[in-house]
Structures are given as structure tokens and as C-alpha cells.
Length: 359
Image 1 (cartoon, rainbow, N blue to C red):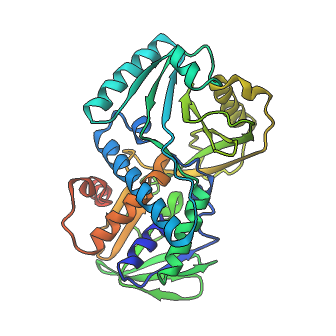
Image 2: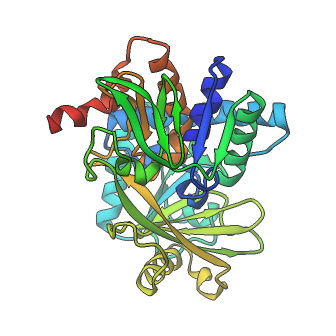
């Protein structure tokens, strides 16, 4: 979020400094699978679906821009996303989901079990059918992060790593900058994009339940040939296959505070779901595993925009859709800073909705 917003603002001519306590993207950004699947994640929420689709298309434009300017392929692929059903109830849910998506103008094709096996032979033969969403896809978060950070630097953004923000400084209802460990840094605009740690920063008008950590554990392996051509959801999990054969399996959703690490239970959960989708993974070796924290919110929507403190903006709380919504978030923050009249979508994401409830 920080790099995306910085890159966008710098292109508009702003002088931007990014403050990072470790290195950019060391937390959830680097741990994410990079699924660009708004239709699977948000089929029952018209607003979230609309936002996700808009941001997915911004990803396509951004990927082309970064490739042309810096020669970096960020792995954007409109490979399609599948959701697989293993029971009659799940099959009925796919029918309902397909209809809702079509009403929203999303192409959603119902596949029979025969079509599924023909298109994705590695999928479990016990599956009764699937929902195919061909416009969705994936991106490689680490490559995207490197490219956006490079783009930001080329646009004049200053990165200060090892800088821990101790508090946001404000006078009355006007931001003045931030307090670092050994100095105060002045600034007339401050954007807080600290993920799950956002509400731990003193000076923000939120309690710790406004944005909270949700741990996700993941496992990776490698297959030859590549396991799937598409991103596949099913059995409560997902499997993401990269073109070179890397396979990412995820993910748990655990409210355990800031407890880091992977657990036997978490790994068993992820592996069980992945092998339910693709039984051949049961003989694959585990190459790596990790966990990180998604920033959740009470209503499932992120906080994007200006707070009641003038000049203080938030870009956080994106939960499972941080990578997906990063380009759109940058656009919305830039628009808010320029004084544009807030769109309906921007109003729905306004951080002030939680301040008003708190008041």
C-alpha cells in the first residue's frame, strides 16, 4: 500500500518520503499469493466486487507500464479462476453465485465434472463441477513490490528504512507530521499504510479493534509440469500455480493476535484442503512455509481516505484483498488529496465511518 500510494502521488508531482521500520513489503505484501479474484472473494457484495474489478483492470495497466518503463514482468496473468464443488449443496451455491455474478455483468461459466477434468486434469475426480471466471487472474507480489518501489524511486520518492514511527503529530484537527524514534518529521500530509499494525500507532482516531491482525499460513511446493493453468478454489482453500511450476497453497484465517509462526494444525489444515483440490499434491515435497497477518476490519472493507484530522490519510484494512486493491487504493488516496469530490465508492471506504461510530 505504501509503495503504491507513494508511486502514484509522486507521478502527480508530490514530494514523498516513505518511512519503513524494516524493508518495504516485509510483511503481508511478500507473503500474499497474489490472487486477483474479486468475483470469487466478493460475489455477494456488489460494492466490493465493483472495487475489485476496477482494481484488477488497473493492475493490467500498471503491469504494462512497469514492464515498458523498467523491464520488469510482475507476473500479471489473466489466467482465470475456478471454484470447485465437492457436494450437492456446494454445487447449488455455485449456481447461485454464477447468477449473481451475471447480474453484475461478470462472465461466469458453470462447468460440469467432465469439463473440469478435461480443462484441469490434476483436479480431484470427486469434484461435481466448477464455476469458471475467466477474467480473473494473478500477479507475483514480490515482483510487483520491487517494480513499484523502483518506479517510486525513479519518480523521486525517498525511502527511509529502519524508521519506526512512534506517533502521528497533530495540532488540533490538523496533522503536522510524525514522531520517529530520534526526531520529529514535519509534513502537511501523512498517509498511514501500516497494515495490521495501523491502529497501534498513537495519534490515530481508532481503537485496536478497528483494524486487527488475522494470521494466514501458507505452504509451497513445485510440480513438473505445472499443476494447474488457473487459480483453483475449493474445500475452503486455494491452490495458485505459477508458470514455472511453483505451487502456493493457502490459507488459514486465525484471530491469534500478533503470534507469528506456522503450526502443526495450520499446516495440516492447508495441506488437507490443497490435497482435496489436487490429490497428486499428497506426494509433493514441502519447499517452504510461512505466515503473516492480514489487516481485518469489522465490516470487511478497507479504510481508505482522509480522517477527521485534516491531512491525515489511511490506506489499510484490506484483509484478503491487499494486493488486488493496491492500485485502486493509490488512485483513491491521490484523488482525495487533490480535493476531488468523493465518489460513492470512496465514501463507502472512508475511515471516518469508524470515527463516527466511536464518537
